[in-house]
Image (cartoon, rainbow, N blue to C red):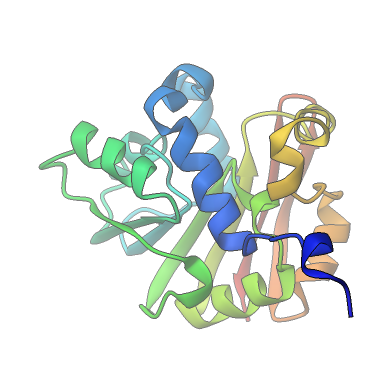
Length: 205
């Protein structure tokens, strides 16, 4: 048995991820922004429907909210692991009609969504099998799962390869490889792996 001097505390991955983004929340909007027309184009190409019950997972400070609200959802529910991110989102979108809360998606219990969007966040879900099973639980049959990034896969993986981000990230694989990891319960009909965007989108069978 190792001596006490050799024992090293390893934080729980969820806590490590939460703390990482909490530290960045106050300046996140200066670091992660994109023209609204590009976000609209990504969501359109991904097949995000109009109306329905929409879940924005890892919503950050709300970068998707304007584009999602323009699609007139019956319900727009947004969650993020980081209370700091959620606080910023609530400040920016108070009264906008978005239900926002600090939640661990792996433990999220709400069901009945017609569309679930994960934008600029999928690599931070380290347990892909649990991610897939949770997405299945959250979505109605025929509901759409959208994984998207506002930059290309190569640039994203380079960014996550160094510094503190590598401890809270997994490499983003090609669309076909990620589709295999997410399992046969989804029928993926949109796969875009371009220099300035990445989209993997499909419906629950």
